[in-house]
Image (cartoon, rainbow, N blue to C red; front, side):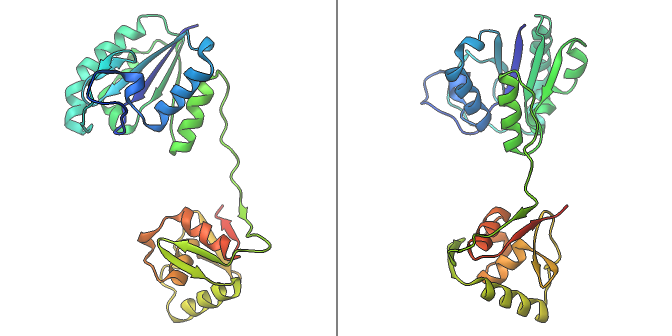
Amino acid sequence: MTRLLILTCSARKRGGPEPTPVVDRYDGPLWQVLRSYLREQPMFAADLAIYGLSAEFGLIPGDQRIPHYDRTMDPEQADALRPQVLETFAELMGQGYDQLCLGVSDRYLRAMEGWQALAPADVTVRVTDGPMGAKLGQLRAWLEGRAWAPAERPAHLAAPAAPRGEVVLAGVRLQLSREDVVAQGRAALATDGAGAGRYRDWYVLLDGRPVAAKWLAGVISGLPTSKFDAANARRALLALGVDVERAV
């Protein structure tokens, strides 16, 4: 059994200006997972062919040495690279690979438009998708030859029984009890409440009413919600003793 892995190049790179093998040059999360696998399980990597899809060089083998460079894959560059990319991909598909994994972002997939028609029907294909955490899990599972399933996401995040009552959110130190948070949320709802109901994934029950976790974090901090992300909003609320719920 032989496997082919194609990964998108990354803006983050390792090494200096001297030519460095592709597999060592790129330092994005997918490449880090790959190198970890190669270090930990080298005996299982003998059947693995690695290629990088580069905004500068097109589709190139993992052992090709390339200089340090800075180029972004835009639509025009993807279109310009496509003939070379598809020609190389067609040659690879003629080499009898059993499995193919594409860890390629949408911007880079444009340079591979038409690849499906070049992949033989008997080749098993895995295209990583979803958020980066899911892509990393999918790649690791494919490398290790096992099935991947998304981890179950909790529907309820419970605050500690003895919360810290102090947290820093986007540079603002908050020292509040759970009762303080609830009181400020109630007051904001009574006076305006604009944006309280606009949530996608996470909310807080305030007197039985679901309000956006980011909105509530913005109320108690005085910060616009653009100054912090949802994960930090949840972290702050939990540290202050407030439970957070996931929208179904």
